[in-house]
Image 1 (cartoon, helix red, strand yellow):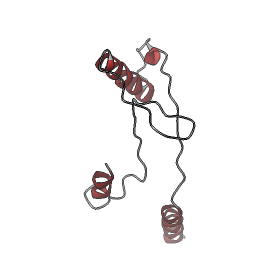
Image 2: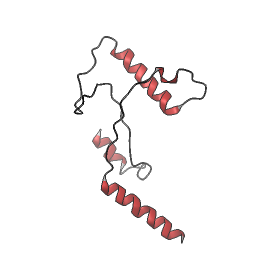
Image 3: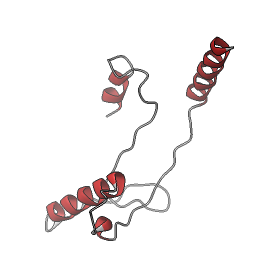
Length: 100
């Protein structure tokens, strides 16, 4: 996944995004370690339901009444890379300076 994200820093999508989201179906323990893969019995059904719930939560379709089927998940916020933040601030200052 890292290689694919790196490619986007050099292709036509460069500058269009500076973050990404990823979703998993494995449990995470209190130390951040991934648990085992869900067993095959019902895992496809669970995966489909999870993906549908993610789409509903993200897109918030106005006519949808399912509301993600009680979607339950943990959100992990990763620390912003200081180099990226510095580049963002420099870019903003340059844009503001150009408008003055």
